[in-house]
Image (spheres, helix red, strand yellow):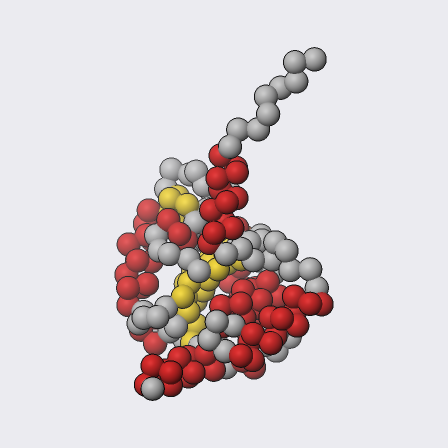
Length: 183
Ligand code: SF4
């Protein structure tokens, strides 16, 4: 009973904590755009929270550098279970364009597990909102209805990726293509 109550409350008002792992601030501005009135994630009860100890969702931007890695892990560990991570922007997805740099370890998943990947340089606010909604849809029927409505009315392919899709993309990127033509 208590578990159901906590799950209901979390789905109705998820608190998100924003962490810049080393981004240029482009994606951070788009996160603000997703939260403010035009895209208005706050209408679903999403609240920006300063402390990871009170947050359910970590919105992480930027590549993970050697300097920040331990701090990212510490912040993630400070969050209570169950916790979710949405990485925002191509830097957060893969570290690109800064990877491989001498001090860049990769995307956010070089440090902590990621639940939703939102690509783009910068990530689009509607894609960030869709990624957060997709996450909330597992907890909240209102978010589930919105996700169904979005998917029925617009092309969402490539807006976000789930962890298994990112894995597939990484594997196919490592598979050598056909060799040069012999003609
Ligand atoms: S993905 Fe682009 S806009 Fe976002 S942090 Fe990286 S360089 Fe900046």
